[in-house]
Image (cartoon, rainbow, N blue to C red; front, top):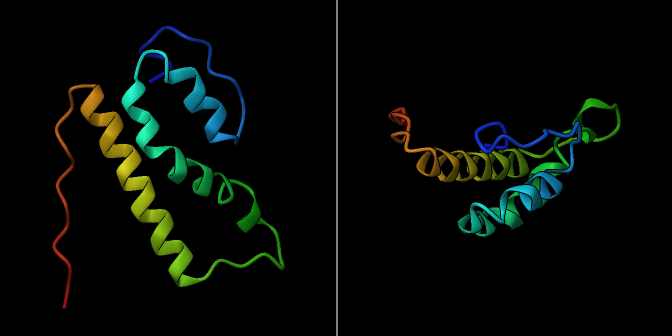
Amino acid sequence: MLEELGQHIPKTHALEDLLNLLLPAHGTLASVQRGLLFLTDFAVDPRYPGTGTSKREAASALRWAGKVRDACRALLGLRPPRRRAKSS
């Protein structure tokens, strides 16, 4: 989204910093701020031994990532992605 705005894209794992760059143009993204704070922890921590992620945390991260993606796609005028049917 920063690219679409013609802005510099900093190298960072801090998703809130990236969000703050987008908010002046896309204030509605404030609704996903809490999720981005949560997702930032998954950028680095799971790569190292001794830091595990529970199934509950992983499921929550996937939900937040989906919400962020859907919000960005809507702002870019893209249709929501097809959702896979859940298997029983």
